[in-house]
Image (cartoon, rainbow, N blue to C red; front, side, top):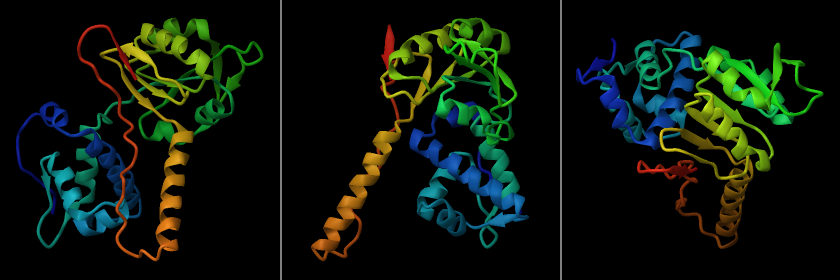
Length: 253
């Protein structure tokens, strides 16, 4: 049986009310559910989905309630319906064209990654400053010069820019992406970006993530050394959000 729509509230209103942490979990649920659908699964209980996704079932049910989706007692959730609901709320019913800036090792890997197009994120533009790279196809797409970012992004209607440059170049690249009409930026450079308030930025700092993992390893070793086999009093993961000032001027992210 399909999940029940509990409200006719417009999706835009419901999406605005969803906490950022819940949005991140919805993306995880979508990955899990898409895999189950490919294996032929048609229904799943909240307990089963919570186990696979790594969250408690109460939190999962709360997250899915933001969609207006409730399972059927004794049956669970309809996998196909739930996938469609999450895709709509995450804006995945249309493609988001991506530009990758900085075709070093990381940028090269991102440009060649085949998983993006199938998830609605086709890479449509590549940029670098190296004259040995400009004009050379990477993943079937020729690399353009950094100076052409605003023009190319505007022409190809790029909505997401990925910054994989050294930190010294990141802000300049960010400014060019914004000038080209890019609305969202995924920043791999270890630097804080200044952007207009309407631009969304997600920062991925791999060193910070490794440091967080180091903390958890050290804490567990310390608990084991002291014979403390009690519950894991987690300090929580790092917040990957940003200071989103909706006032005047620039926002630091």
